[in-house]
Image 1 (cartoon, rainbow, N blue to C red):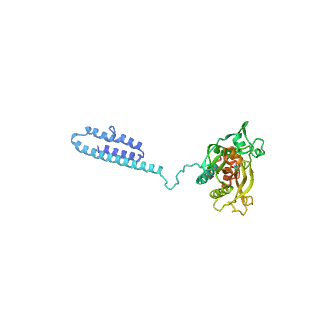
Image 2 (image 1 turned 45 degrees about the vertical axis):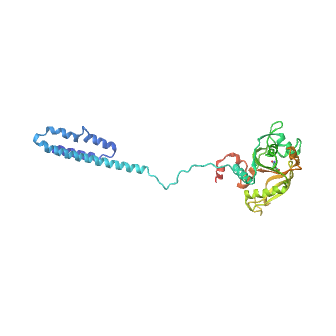
Image 3 (image 1 turned 90 degrees about the vertical axis):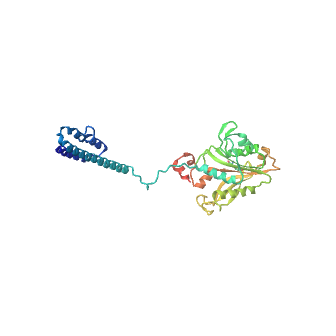
Length: 340
Ligand code: DAH
């Protein structure tokens, strides 16, 4: 029996050295300690031992069993530890690495400028009003004091949808629609898309305007200038000044082009202002009495001013964009530059 045990111990020790995984461990247990294992089998072989030697042999076998089980437990603990270490190593988290950032969207420069302009005018008490993009000739031209065959129709290259139906060439029909539905005092801002058959680096067949209209008793050109001063200062900076130049629009009399002192060079002259110190930003004037009459507003009682701002133009000036085409290309390299 002693020899048998010694042989088994030697075999077990040799096998133990080769146990590295859970599978090896299970095979080890199968071979030695399971019901049919060779260590368990020693007890059965007690039958063959002479009766008087059995107690001593039983003791030896038991001691060996306890030792073998101890070996198994130790191996099991070792393997568990090794597997845990391997898993920890594989799952190591480097908490100093930067996290994965989620890309956020950004507002289009046109939307940004539009919101900014609306904010400024809303602060001065203007209401927002919108009109249709497909207009009739009456609203787009005739009632704005541009009758058929008037040369001013050539100022805007019009897209015709049908006879007397156009894609609006400006947001000015918003003036007519407002006066048709509202009684003075009126103070509205009409943003919207407009269309002209025109295309180059600074003109696009579709672009955006913002129309302003104020009608009340005693409104003069001075009111327009005072309000515009506040507006351009909010948009371009507190030092910016305005300059009104005489101009012509059929729906205003007098009409003006409004320049701002160059916010890039402060008026000294630079490429942005083409070395003039001034940048043209919008058109406006005192609402023509014919327009008031065409909307049932008595010009003896009321007067008003109106203005039209090109949003693309303001956005291009503000952000230094040199080609209007970029606005509609949806190139992410362009759009991503307008994140806050
Ligand atoms: N409608 C003009 C245009 O598209 C802009 C404009 C000029 C609007 C003078 C006005 C204004 O209301 O008074 O060029």
